[in-house]
Image (cartoon, rainbow, N blue to C red; front, side, top):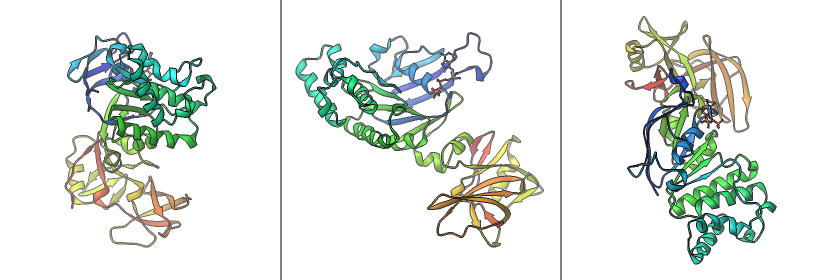
Length: 366
Ligand SMILES: Nc1ncnc2c1ncn2[C@@H]1O[C@H](COP(=O)(O)OP(=O)(O)OP(=O)(O)O)[C@@H](O)[C@H]1O
């Protein structure tokens, strides 16, 4: 098992990179602690697979270092790094039995047969593959094959870490949740450093204790699922996490007020002061749909807004609103009155985020 450190790591696929956009991985420093369950979450093309391949040694970074337990491993080939990688599609030998597939990584490093048997039985038990051990792998279902693939990653007890690259892509939706829970259970039992790559926030938050959100080749936030929800560090995290994502309003300070376009917002003095002293004109106020207070009648400090439509999702509704010229979404629970036509909104200070040049900045709360 190992702690994995990325030091000033950067990667480009281009021969003569000029701008930050030319990099698949922009210079980053990051630590995956030993025994942690992590997710690497981000949209297609943000650099997740590139980063995993650099860690496992399949790809050499353009600059910077990868360290396992403080030792630089850049020069080590994949097989010497003791990293197990589970890919989107199962990597197994179809003509072998499930038992032999699971035994393969151990036999490959000349493990005594008694130990091979012990480990194969243990891993098969955890993955509920014991009844399939004698079957040829080619006769298995897609999810059974992926379980064997995962088992091959888990069977060696000397691996530094297991990297999962979208491992549930080929799995039936009904079985996905089961395998996700299984992976979590496996992590608790074996305490191996696990990094799980996905573009699905639900998969990331059910598996991981901490999630690294990647955007344009950078880790823009590394935090617990709760931190990502409550205090997104970057507008992308606010938009990407949550369903629907965070509302963002372009704001500016004018004559002692905070304005979005020509509409004055009712917000605290601390926000006004932070907006007024910001060094950039790219300033956004963020609030999650869950925290927008929606009233059907005028209330003190309520900002009048137009109700465009409401989407009933069973136990709650999403209301689409227009405040001045800005579109907003708010979540209304089933026991609340859903206004029609007109509403009055309040933004509780505690749930507002202020973003300057897309990054969250602090302000004094009332
Ligand atoms: N072999 C390659 N040659 C050139 N460019 C590449 C190569 N592999 C990836 N890229 C580019 O690098 C960037 C990051 O790609 P990467 O595959 O790491 O992203 P990802 O987040 O894993 O996306 P996905 O979820 O679609 O696999 C993208 O712009 C991609 O087009």
